[in-house]
Length: 455
Ligand code: PLP
Image (cartoon, rainbow, N blue to C red; front, side, top):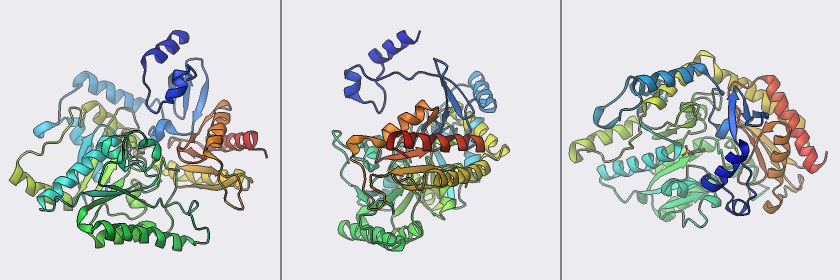
């Protein structure tokens, strides 16, 4: 029964991102999810809710897709595992590599498969250090990230993540990881700045950091095309073009972390297409398999691959790999998922219904006295709550206003996410969201805001 599972859960299961003190006090409620279909999930007590965050913005194709689960079952029964080391492959992993590279920007060359977004970003950094070693410049090693960027939870990737929650008490960030300005125009410190002036300020901060550290010590700049976990913040106009110009000038590689944006979330195949980025590495995970099985990838550019190839002659084997890299079950899920997304034009739906969701959300809550900003891109939408709209004053984080709104929303049957930084309610539904479901998210968000903050 649920009672037994509750007890076993509390006694045995150390959950990620757990509130340890609440757990110790016995206050952490188990949430046992038992089934899901399209955009809805269901718990063991039969409560059915609309998942406005697609799990952790990963179930892009929607839940319960037979095309994907059948492909997984077939793969599992025919060949559940073989490794990918030293030239080994499977029909699924080789087919998926071809499908990924056919869809990636034209200047990209190869994909290195991993398990999740964090390990793919670790791979990117290691490949880049290897690359700089081959080029005889091992000291070109530091990595610049942005405050409020999210790149994972490993030692390096947790360091790259620019959220203090991921650093505190872990002794992170590691040496050699630097953070520059978050490209969040709404939260700019100087309210006098225009959008163009704010972009100039971001560029200036980056230039100063590079001058101070020395370009010959900096390997890469990593960024999400749209800041995700840090608050769902599309970049200000002209931001990426200006940042890329600085990176090119100083021969600093660009890593586009497309774990959230890859395979359609912005309404384009990649965020790099959407914002005209020319990255040296692209990180992919979540949407690669719509989370039907774990799989990630580091896509490397022609420029990087050509150098790595030379290194192989001199150094032999590159000592980097995971047992489960290119796992056939993940690869089979990826092949079926990418096929399905195209067959049903789910990226077109993400674009159309995402635009509708954003437009309706803006119309419904944009004028509320405690809504400072409504923003989004493709099938991403965020509502930022403020204490005082005119003076753009924020709430005290201890009041947990965003958490309260999300709780009210959940009790009305919709999942939104209180983003870890600030009182920002995030939405990233599956791409198959209908207009009626978008309306439901909007109406219930409005009601939840009114319930917590008044009309
Ligand atoms: N990069 C980005 C942009 C992410 O949003 C995430 C996870 O949310 C990661 C990396 C880490 O991926 P994972 O949790 O699969 O390790």
